[in-house]
Amino acid sequence: MSTSEHSSAIPTLELNDGASVPQIGLGTYAMHDAEGVGAIIAGIDNGYRLLDTAVNYENEREVGQAVIDSKVGRDELFITSKVPGRHHGFDETIASTEESLARLQLERLDLHLIHWPNPSVGKYVDTWRGLIELRERGLVTSIGVSNFTEAMLQELIDETGVTPAVNQIELHPYFPQSKLIEFHRSIGVQTESWSPLYRDQGLFDEAPIAEAAAAHGVEPAQVVLRWHLEVGSLSIPKSANPDRQKLNADIFGFNLTPAEVDAISGLERGRMKGRDPLTHEEM
Ligand SMILES: NC(=O)C1=CN([C@@H]2O[C@H](COP(=O)(O)OP(=O)(O)OC[C@H]3O[C@@H](n4cnc5c(N)ncnc54)[C@H](OP(=O)(O)O)[C@@H]3O)[C@@H](O)[C@H]2O)C=CC1
Ligand SMILES: O=C(O)C(=O)[C@@H](O)[C@H](O)C(=O)CO
Image (cartoon, rainbow, N blue to C red; front, side):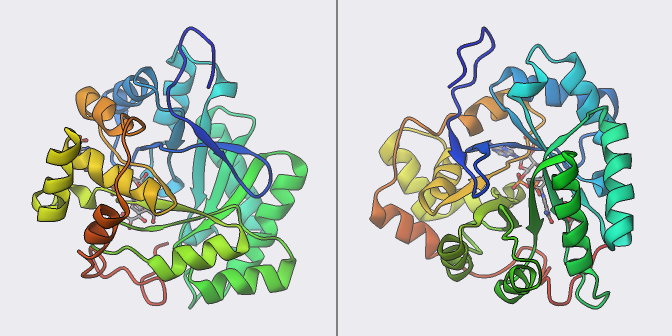
């Protein structure tokens, strides 16, 4: 834990390349303009150090401004962005990343991901080679992917010998992805959960979550975010509300029992919007 005046209580874990990453981060999807900058600064003030953005969120400028305006030093923060589908390809990935860095007003990203594999385009291996090159040039510290299947991960490793540090995937109690998490664990990839709260669309009323919340004296959202840690994933809940930001990050003072974890995982019913990376493509 940092000892600075603006320290964070969020512990870290180590990625397969030795880099340190906070165990929970702030999603920034749909945070825009001055209001978005204010919400991101509030997140940093509330202890978040990992900020998750993407070219396609069209808010890298806001994230960069929040980093500049916050009271926390750049080196204490962990900034993630993502290469969009329209920038797949070796040269395109280098150019895309240089543009992201310019918008973010940063010299280096802590983690850069391939946002979606877009298999019909057939360029994710070239894109991965671009990320490897960027890491060698020192423009990004860690490299990873998002929405990759087991077979796609294996293909990247077979083709390049480089294992992604992270696979950021849709993961929540309705879609627990236990087989993919186990595969990640077996090859040293850190699982990262997107839409970890299922965008507050009814999940919190589910009995195993409400019951665990009552048993531990916490809120249902905290149970859900603790469940992500218990199954081995770091999550990036988005909240623009300072009170909910604080609540969501306050998950390190209790544990769920194995029975509670199993009951919550038993809520499985499928993806939120049918975004199967074998067929769903985003440019
Ligand atoms: N790689 C990928 O393909 C994807 C990546 N992502 C990333 O993951 C992040 C998180 O996912 P996201 O889709 O935003 O969804 P989340 O599951 O994080 O849910 C966010 C929604 O839940 C609300 N919320 C947050 N905390 C609470 C709480 N304690 N109680 C009640 N409601 C709450 C927020 O509202 P409010 O702000 O008002 O608190 C917001 O409406 C994104 O922001 C983005 O960075 C997301 C989708 C795909
Ligand atoms: O937010 C992201 O990172 C995405 O990849 C999108 O799928 C986004 O979640 C979305 O909901 C677009 O409709």
